[in-house]
Image (tube, rainbow over all chains, first blue to last red):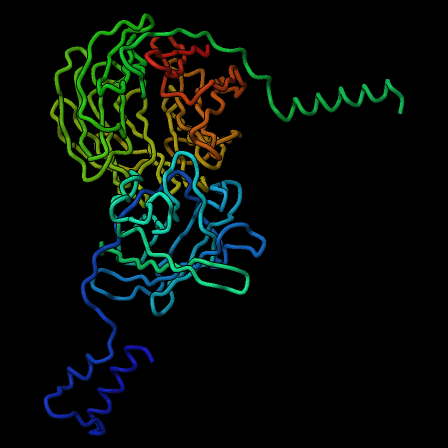
Length: 209
Length: 323
């Protein structure tokens, strides 16, 4: 049930007298109960766009082909504004190097455009990006846009990256492009029928214009 | 198959292969070696005066007369690597920006600080106008601001675009500035008031280098698309496309407007050198094509119309003249 539907139902029930509130519980309390957490959120730190952004990426969440080498990677998250509102319809453009550390400049491998769903959720299937010369850490690029919000360019990093030597808090500055350790996300290694895979949660919070 | 027929086929194969590779690579350019007190890590050239400047690992800028390499002045730098480093085409000013967002402008003649600015994050673009009076400066991801160098104040800011600005160039009369923007557009603005003159969205990947032709009518742009776009500065329309082999590190049109110098990036390993070419304009024929022995640390057009590329070794700066 959507938040609007739940509120409407409670208000209708209260108006018809079919909603009985217990002692000390106001209608406002009842409306508030079960509502999404709308506490203030800190904006996701910025990171630079990099030289290999490519527009018109395909709307595919499955970037990894079964035959692709590399550790399978599932990334998921929600998109909020700084007031904690879910941003349904936010667009996320994702691009990354493949397992060998190469970007596809001629096509759209490991490039995707996603749309946050009604719960602000997004997800994609990929591989852990490879390291490459000239850049210290494994990373995934994001360009996120939503109506009424500032576009955000950022990058997702992985706490399992050997560069961090198991301590991202201490070592994240080894990559001069990482301004905030918040962009280094924990990685859960899961067992799948085809072998181990990595799962990462990355929440995005956009600032208003 | 007869022996003679086989030979003919092999000659044909070689001819086809040569066609696919393009013109044969040029001979090694003339090299001059300058001795420095410490290894250079970045080198820039003033297109309007016979000077250049190098950052050396002992945290100094060394202003050098060219072509003799005589050190005119050394300027002390704060510790830490540079994110931007440039010299004005008239040679009057040098700009240096570090990873903390501190930007310094010095007079190259006196070494006196002309201007100090603080950006909210590290700079991504710093380009002087041809008369040296304006510095186009942007923090990574932010809008480009045009700084009056004499007053050390921002007199106008260009539009903020998603991803910020990747490169910028002034027209020869300094009336217009072209930007290569992260959102893949090439935009032309009036430098006096930041009015958008034209916009080109024909690139699929971000353009990484731009320059005006000498007459100011056309902007050339090149990025990950590996195609040089010729963009009408007034309308934003693409008038011509010229294939390239890689994205660029840099692209500059010669002072007399007849040659396009492009320093290509080996996109699969940016730490390795790739081709550096000189292409005649408007014909588009290749005049020089050379791969340096190591990754260049800079270069540019000289006042004498030569395109020089700098590489570094321990205590020596190697300047290679491509034309």
